[in-house]
Image (tube, rainbow, N blue to C red; front, side, top):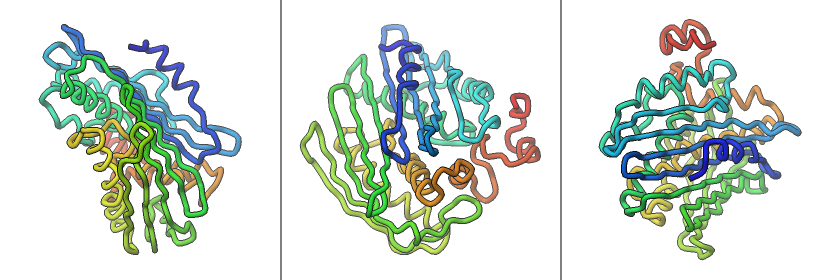
Amino acid sequence: MQTINEFKNEIDKLYLDNTLAMRVIRGEVKRDADKVSILAYQCNMARMKTTDIKLPTFIEIIADANGIIKDISLYDNFKGSQGMVCSGKYLDKTLKSYLLNKNINSDFSILKYTKNYHCRHTYEVVAAGISFYHFLVDGKLDYGSFLNKTVAYECEAGLEIKDELVINDDEYLLKENVHFNAKDLKMLSNGKIGAIDAFKLDGNFFHNGLMVDDFVKEITPCDTASKVTLNMMRLFNCPWKMLGRIVGKNRNFYFTNLVPSSFYGVLIQAISLILFPNNYNYFQHTMAGLQREDNIPLCSGMVINFDEINEFYPDLIKYI
C-alpha cells in the first residue's frame, strides 16, 4: 500500500493536457487481521489561461476488525473551489464528528450524501473508499486499488468525454460524446443551466481493450432549471448503471466519477469554460449553481454571507 506522502506526490504530478476539465478519484484499501486501512483522494482540475487550477481532497480512514471507524483525517493539501469558506480544518472536524464510531460494514447511510458532510467532495471521497472496500469484501480480497480519471475536451459536437477506470489489473474505458450547442444553453444568474433545446449522449464501453457495450441517450427540450437538472440526472444514470453491471458492482457503486451528481459536476465545469473561457469567477459561480437549492447552501463552501454561516454552519465562523 502506498504511503501518505506517495499519494500526495501523485496528486502533485497530475496535470491537464489540452483538456478543459479533469476529475481524478483514486484509492487503495488494505484489510489486515486487526484493522482496515483506506486511503482515497479526489482531484478536480480546470485550465485557466496558462494556469491549471487544482483542487485536491485526500482522506484516510482507519477502521477496526469489526468495521468501526476509529480514525479519519482530511489531509492539509485540501483545497476547495470557494476560498476560505472551504476550510480544511473545519471539514476535518466535521468528518470526525459525523463518522467516528460508524460501522463501514453495516451503516450504509454514510454512503448517501447528507448535509452532515458539509462538503460534497469529502462525501464523494468517503463514499468511493468505503464502497470499494465492500467491493473487495464481496470478492474476498484483502487488498485492492482503483484509479478513475475523467477528462473533458471541447469538440465539434460539444464535448468529448474520456473516462478511464482501472481496478487492480482490470481496465475499463468509456468514450463518450456529449452533443449540444453552447448557444442553446441558457445560463441563469445563480449559476444553473436554466434551459436547453437539445442534449444527447452516445458512448462505447471497453474492457481490457475490447468493446463490451454502447448506448445512445437524449433528453427533450427543458425550459426550467429544475427540469434540466432532473433530466440530466436521469440521462447520466445510464452510463453509471451500465458500468456498474460491467464491473460487477450493481449497488452502491461510488468509486467512479460516473455517479450522476459527480459527472454533472465535470460537465458543468467544462461547459462553463466553453461559455466563459479563462473566467475563474464564473467557474466558481457554476459550482455554486450545483450546491445551492432554493437559496439554501448544500455545503459549507456555498454560504454567501455571515447570516447563512450562523444559520446553517455556525461552527464554520471559528475557522475563517
